[in-house]
Length: 92
Length: 251
Image (cartoon, rainbow over all chains, first blue to last red; front, side, top):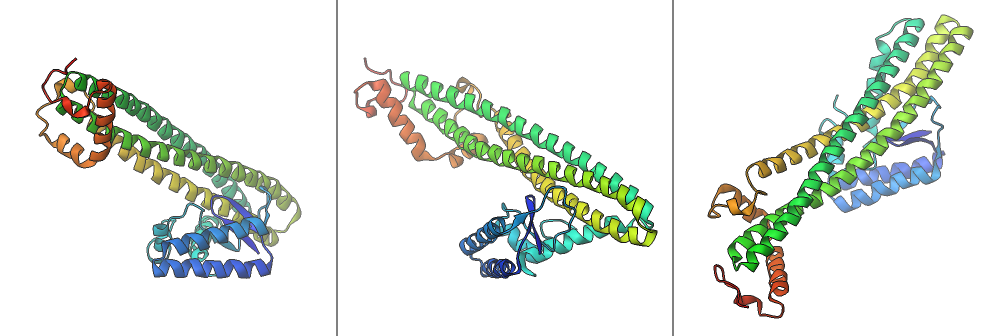
């Protein structure tokens, strides 16, 4: 599976890693819903760290599309909240 | 995967297919995509130039504020040496405002620096992908039938399109940040224009609007600390409390 970290890079990940990514993603979302800033930051940071460490970066001239696109690492707690309620990071 | 990534993926894919849908036949898709890609690269370059300009402006602003801090400190010292504690306090309060602004400027300039770096990296990636697309489109043109070419072009163009959409997002974030900072810089300029950092000899009775704002903004304790330090330095062993406003300091 190919995962992109927005404004950063694309990585190829094995399925077992994807499962862990998914867990952290769910935990980050749950933290946003619960208004838990600290838990959101911790899970989101872990999520990106996992993709960077376990994934193999795609070459710059690789034209493969990503299966999953993660928000950029400077995503704020407020922006994460808007992802679910408002326009999201990218206005439509 | 839903969650944080879900919306990002959906929106970017929608943007990419919107670009691709505009062209119908394979030949057109090729040319249209490639042309769009080059335009997009040009926009990224312009965006980086804008971020650099904004950063330079803020750095100049920051230098000006640094000068104000030094000037106000000197003026406070002079006022205190002349026994004018009231004026010295005023100067130190203003110095405190300038210092607080300065700190936030430095943080923001560093953030802009980071955005600039990200954009530069993104530009290099996008350039590499566009180049790969250019090579691939020649191969596709030469080797495949129209129907097959359509599929392969779409695949390749989606990869570039995703990169374009991603650079677009990075750009948007950099521009938003720059706008915030422009507004801040304008606010500081307004304060300056209103006489905040002017020569202290032109100060009024300390009851105008700017003075009230300043009093609210500045931290009293920092000013008190500064006062005590200056008094100690000037007094050279004399108890600080002996200098009264309007009195000549005793030799």
